[in-house]
Image 1 (tube, each protein chain N blue to C red):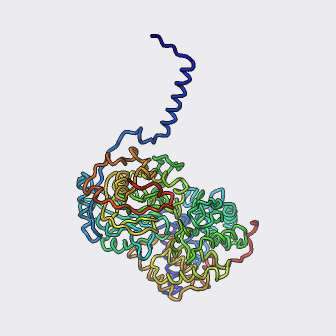
Image 2 (image 1 turned 30 degrees about the horizontal axis):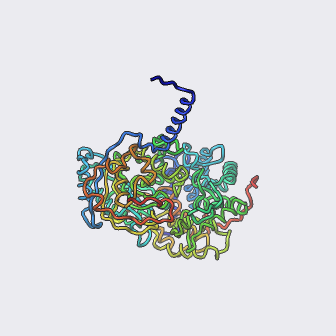
Length: 307
Length: 333
């Protein structure tokens, strides 16, 4: 497998899942999904898809945005606004989506999860006051949505915004003492919980360029130690993105991705989000492959009108 | 003799009525409900290499479920897959229990059997599916597996109304099945007290609507949510893997506990109450079971007809941890 063949595969497979009027489905022949469309745009973009097609899909996301600036998993479930960060990334560098992107950024900056000061009776080990972002409105902040939102705000020039800086502190607070992250739990009733590669990869991608390597050395070591055994797209995709963000992408990365793709004969066809995450992880091995929205250390100038 | 009623008498009577009425408010609702009956089956299984399909088939027969009821049905088995860790297979429903259930339902004439799960901690469902050993079994048996966390959903009004959730969102896949079977693991739980067939159904709620963990359900109240999901979904059957369960700091960090049983039944509160008694836990001290009593099903031992092995013959006290509030006072005398 080469970078070139990978890009061809992305364009062919995502074309199969594309809708004529814009938008991408979860699986071929199924219905439009916001998360699938956003991930699909990122993968299409990295694969060199033509801009007209990309704009068609971006435009569909703009149609799905609500008045508050959110992109939800579907319009019947406005609390499930976690795809907003993905849409911000998907709209990057698109003049026609600029206003929608700004509305989404404002929404994220004004939104957080449920938080409170630590109480004496708390069984959980992390600081529940540090704010990140939740999966679903009205719930606590967790690692992956916080990391995605940090990536989206870094990509749009808000790396130094106080929300991002606090989110970085939140992610670090949830790092396990022996290395790695899980969904966002450290100790419960005195027992350290276990790390997970997908959460660790996402956290490391979010932290890249924001903290020194010494702060995440154990987590990088954990993830490097896990890489060769990973066979499923979400774990492997985030692992490759997380390691690429710290310039530690494994030399056998493409071989691992090829093995994972072959596992569809065992697990069934991968849904679009998982597939794109995997393929973006594969392309992240070469800087020229334009995956830097997910692996860049941040530092672009602020988007217009957002403070 | 003539009686005269004074104003003092009236005031005293009113005060007495108020006290009695207030006291009645403190009496659990289950005492005012029509008593229910159910059956539960306990099958003895020494280890996972035994004929588990045979035990499940015997259990279904002992519970009075005829093949005609299952013939042509599309059955969905929902195991408890949480996380995987080296040396800790007791976290999850054992794959050979799933194999046994699949075989039993197909023998009874089910049109199809599928397995589906939506883990609450791991975003990568396929990783848990693979690392738990279930993928190897289902691939060999050619049984499909569905990741419930990413399937678009449909809403139903919350039939339990214990929490503030007005609707519950279930995976669209459920419209294509006839029987939903909770295939749980027998474990203690550090927030809920015990996790059995009812709590197992947290895993049917898609993560794209409920998060990872399923924090919407925690925010609504774990006990409330267990009841709401069961009241709304109305699952058809339960099998609890108690061959090797988990004691101590469940549902992940506890220790293996060998019990040697499978517990089954149509009524999930009755199955869970039976499991609790096997574990040495008073089911009336597990809040969701106490509240479910004579509403979703019977919890009283007298109201549950026990088939197969008896509870005393298989009871083995699960270790409870004093410093975990949800474990306090759970021990069954």
